[in-house]
Image 1 (cartoon, rainbow, N blue to C red):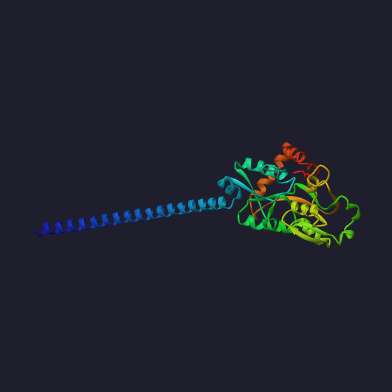
Image 2 (cartoon, one colour):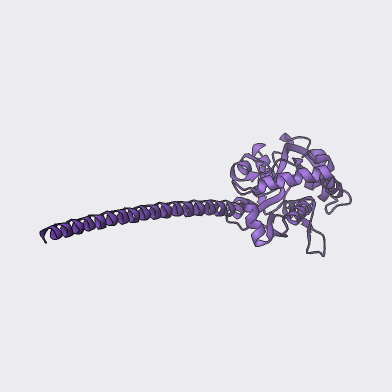
Length: 299
């Protein structure tokens, strides 16, 4: 009997040990499974974070793109003034035409958007750009230090000069700058013409546009004007709007460029477009159409 009790105790002890062993194995398995699950979750979280970071980067890149911004709103908004032969309207028409206007329309077409022209105060062109009231300044803009320091500008595409405009019956009286010191000049506010007047010590009155400066001379309220040579070729002399006015002394030489916002990818896009237009001959055709072919710079 005692022998049977001893055997029973031994068997019971063995069962307890066996069960403890099984419990330990199960716990280890569970712990391993939990650790594996934790590692998997951590990996999954890292992948999600990486994916989110990538998406955020892509979104930020898109948000910084002026080209994409213009495509999204469906309009290229061009800041201009009334400035033949670059941007102007023919009598009785509401359509803006000109060498610059037609080029802007071609770029807008390639972007797949409409082209909208907005007349701006030339003094406020940088502010208009930064406020996104306009996307680009495309208006026979001289590449001055102020302009290139405040905008992202394209490569130059036209050569120009600032020239003095006088009544035809008085031009022989003024052969050089020194002879013009007593004259009062009408100039466009914030323009290269205004700067040329300052640089040469000439007295000037600021107008809202170069067209207004010509009107001042025609009306006799200013003795002379300083405007872009390219505009003078289209606006003064026989067969033009001002047949009794003529060009005189050239005060400076310069180049035109197109202005975009600082850091804008639109600048590179326009440079590529201009190069394409030069290679296919379309920019040369427009230059001849508007009489600026001699001023064209190879792209």
